[in-house]
Amino acid sequence: MMQLYGALVLFLTFSTACGLRCYSCTAADPESCTDTKACSVLFNRCYSVKLGVNVVDKGCLASPACIAPITCCEGDLCNSAVPTGPSVVLLLLSSGLVTLFF
Image 1 (cartoon, helix red, strand yellow):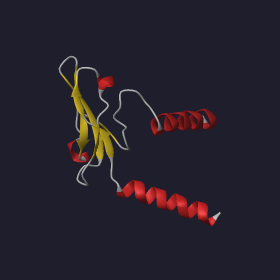
Image 2: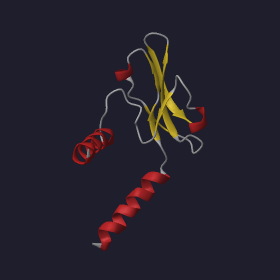
Image 3: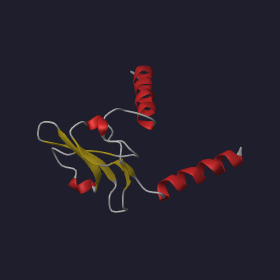
């Protein structure tokens, strides 16, 4: 059991040390944005912002710069157009908890 906890702590430490990853692009179709970028330590949020009617810009940003109309989020690749991976798990988990307790 201790080995499991040790592996979990090691994994979480390694993923934190590697820094945040965000989708990074300027595109007319948000779903076509598949390039990812490792953010520098100065940037702790992923962002998305609409530039005009059909153009979207995505990348890394520092939290103080997260002001309207910029949408910011925390977590690896959280600025995708379609919720995938950990985003879906968190969405399902939070929905289940709300249903259970409210």
